[in-house]
Length: 438
Ligand SMILES: Cc1ncc(COP(=O)(O)O)c(C=O)c1O
Image 1 (spheres, rainbow, N blue to C red):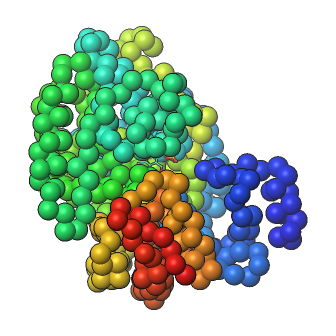
Image 2 (image 1 turned 90 degrees about the vertical axis):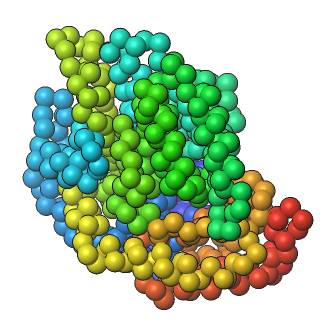
Image 3 (image 1 turned 120 degrees about the vertical axis):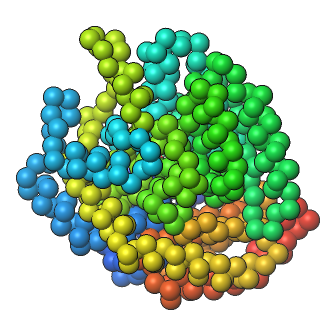
């Protein structure tokens, strides 16, 4: 069966973020159990990256599978203009209940990129609707990644992924990001410089500032301190611009707390959610905004309305999965487990002494070098983990663990053991760029 599938795949399928000429054939997934993916050749792989950060409670989780199956037997999809339905209304209320302040209004879409597009378009139209047409500038942070559609690429232009489309992107001002790590002695100076530049840029024509709160995911799990995000948020909101938190990766417990905004103690004006939103079962997203933003779109004519939507907006199956997944996330067991994962990461940090490393909530990251996306270390690390039945997907030379919360201590220790073994075989050059010596 596997040869058949691989042959069909080779002839007809185009994979994302892959150089198809040189990549080894893909693994053929046939199932999932707990933190592991099962493949057609009878092997299994511990999913240390939660399948691109979407899985929360394990693969094929029976509770979520049941919720989706029950909903599918009742109503699979309905146009979301003119209609609403129970899963969409209940899930929106539940999300609003978990977000701070009056972040109460949920606009559904399909994935992280669309959640961001919605936020950017809403921010721009919001100011037009309230008669502040001059507010059109967008600010984003250096190294940020917000998705692959054109608006999301524009605010993530410095992530290093979009050179092919550089000329197509719209102008966005880029702010310095005070990236930090354990043992960083210059963090306060970096934060002060970043805040000074932010103040300089926050002129009366700024519509919105978008940030991945606390962790920039795709540029290498680059972390900053809550103190910085808080100070930044105060300045942005005092200036009258809107503050957008892109919690596509940080949301749903990745940083321990259910949402990063709660961990920091800030109520942004808009929050973008996706990835873990359905526990990894269905593509879905939400842009949650404060009530006064939605009010600015009310009026007699369509001209003030938000003329944006997607065919599968508020898909009932996605909402049902979201409700089931959120219930598990909020359980005592899952909350405790997230704390245990963080504690285990911290206990194992001695494995990578001498290398830049950081932990936040369930995420741990280590720089095995300082070169970029094309680093030679990444593919070697990935192959090494794969040989040992573990899915690791380094970003350039950055190794990271972002596991489903159901991962066992034994599985996580085994992952750290492998990283320790690999790191011990690296010779660190003067630039910190590692060369793996097997
Ligand atoms: C912070 C952030 N925003 C947006 C996106 C885009 O999400 P999607 O791939 O679902 O479009 C990602 C994806 O990695 C992300 O990490």
